[in-house]
Amino acid sequence: MAGVISLVTPLPGPRSQALAARRAKAVPRGVPATTPLAIVHAENAVVTDADGNRLIDFGGGIGVVNSGHRHPRVVAAVQEQLEHFTHVCFPVSMYEPYIALAEKLNALTPGTHEKRTFFVNSGAEAVENAIKAARRFTGRQAIVCYEHGFHGRTYLGMSLASKVNPYKLGFGPFMPEVYRIPFPYCYRCDSVKKTPGSCCMASKAAMEQHFASIVDPGSVACVIIEPEIGEGGFMPVPVDYMVALREFCTAHGILLIADEIQTGFGRTGKMFAMEHYDVVPDLITTAKSLAGGLPLAAVTGRADVLDAAQPGGLGGTYGGNPLACAAALAVLDAMAEENIPARAAALGETIRDRFSGWAESVPEIGDVRGLGAMVAIELVKDRASKAPAKELTGKLQAEALKRGVILLSAGTLGNVIRVLVPLTVEDAVLEEGLAVMEAALKAARG
Image (cartoon, rainbow, N blue to C red):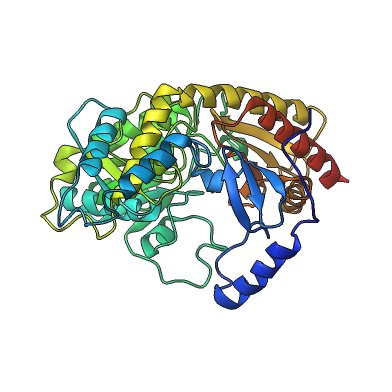
């Protein structure tokens, strides 16, 4: 049986090249272009470009289409909402889809306490508003974030981000009262006290030590952390570290913000990654796969925290757009009825097993890691030095694209290949994509 990949021209084809020429004259060079393709159609995990080339999408719009490109429920929900209205502005005139979606997120996110949810447009905007709410509630100013973290390209987002190039290069000065502490990156930990399954940083003493040299815990409004680092390289937080962090924050009156913008909505095999830890954050930020491709982000959390802001202190003109809310309600229905988080767990086992098998004969694969289907490989020049193999990473991406699979890189060191394939991908399509990825790795190694 023939596969889904169909390459009828070299990549990029002439129509993609023509659009790229127009782009160069109309769009700033600072907007990145991971591939040179112009996409005209997408269906589940397969995209078609302007030249008729059909490729498998292992990038998923950077984790935006967990429910697949053009999920039928999402398409139908948006079409139905279009028959009513596209915008009235929720702060002016309320509408039921916004409220229904807030109710669902209040019920679905970790914790049984009373919650509130409000909507904005992007992940960076959600982060900004969560931190704003934390400062308002606590009356404190300091923010603590982590090495390798990424929280957007706004000024606060850049201030929180760890990777300098391309995200921060030349854009300073950055916001004050932002403090960065080490992330528990177990693969690159040099501790002589390493114990399998535990983290040497997961103790009250270790956390007190990290804070002691940078900021008084009593002045900290919040700590923001990704349960599995996304752009920084797909490193999951060790369970014992997350538990210790929650205890530390509670002891010092610090709010814990879980950034689930990339980990949320089934990607890690749970609806939310924090479910792996049995830890309840005070606030949680979501975006990306919330609305199946439409721009929507949310801040959900403790009612007392989010109710502390005065009327007009939260919200925005487009936040909670009715089309996006309708799409998100359809996504959540699909997640439940199709059991997409469980599907992600099964996909993750398949992908991880394949990557681990490659690692047995490919010494450049230094680490295979991730929760559920949020899986990555870290490429190194050799396992002894763990020197990052950034060039090999780029070659692997290029060889995969040449064969019809879109791959994304990650990592502060630029040497991680991550998988963000739609969680609804058919088994045969996943298998074809992995086979192409294996051939591309062989070619990239020479």
